[in-house]
Image (cartoon, rainbow, N blue to C red; front, side, top):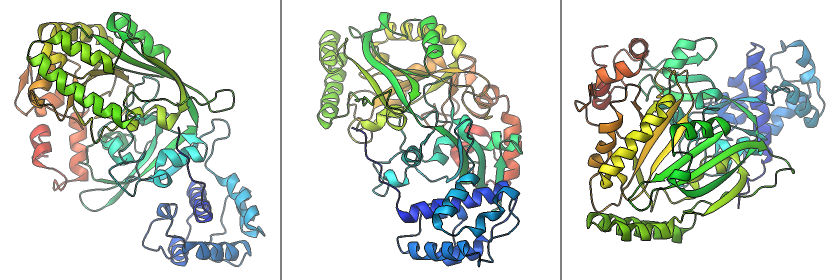
Length: 515
């Protein structure tokens, strides 16, 4: 069942009102004397954007006092040079009239049903179960939904912050929607301690270079985003044999990703299993014509998580002891072919559906992720089929996720310049047999020789110096993978000339010391 988002308190409503006023002033190229206003609120050390987060329940009286002064027309701190349509704002006689007037000032587009918001970069997209302070009231997705808005895409999990989500080019399974669609501007503090504001329209090169920069341009402080009207995701999840699946061939996969807004698959490639958990979904209107049918994750219950863990242990030993048929029998009890569900769920639940499992506790998984040009999908499937046929240990005791990604304008995004197919082998952290690097190396050996192959910045990489085909991991590999890498390094050196943000890991991989 979907969680209940608590209604906005009066403090939050009034704080949001002030935030909207700030946005309006900015759009009119006017300045608000926030220093004086924030002193009234007792939050003078914070930026205007932080007011939205509230300064405690004691702020209510201060906010009301401020609004009383404002609506009486006695306040001298608000500039009088508003755009013509809003000059009568300060002459409203009630809070309700103020709210009605400010509603006109919102950065909403009535045609496209969008809103523009400035968000703290440390704001969690969803709810982080490892952070006791993370909840629906400070989750970007829950608060957007409560106000009638939504992001077009999320990754498979939404525990991360919006700054982290951007920095490594996290993506969901879609060629219709990408992270870049929602980002309008970035505020960061560079290596010289300067605050930089990078606007998508005004500073396209700096913006596209910094958006995916792994923390090497500076510390993200605020992200300006656009969000559209909220929606539901209607779709189907089913377990089928691979020959009957949407990853049976490159053509089938391409058809699926072009016909559906969202697609992802987990291929269980072990001998005598060879099944696929395939998930497809599409946006539909969030209205009474589409009743909510919650998505139920296969590992949503605690008991199923422990049953899966037991299965992973058993199948690992049985595969090692050359008993693949028995291993398959046990695995198919947990993930039976023919199981299916239809769902029509809220976007913030359906898209990051792994939030619903105990991924951070029992089914802890490590990843490497290889992004390859979508046009090479058939070659990818041929390569993986051969790999699993020749090496059952590559099939492992879990699955390999396969899903698409949208072409990105961000210079260092793994999907820069092209739509992609993404291959994401799962390594269960509690495996008692085998080694993580040895397992991932099986995939690196056959997939990194693809000319278009790139590796996810936030997941496992081979050691610098290792060679795959004609490609050696290090600065040369990155340079040949990313056409804008030289320009990116030059800009990075301007943002961080003393290499404040450069660690040995990034220097070895990217060769930044000499910049």
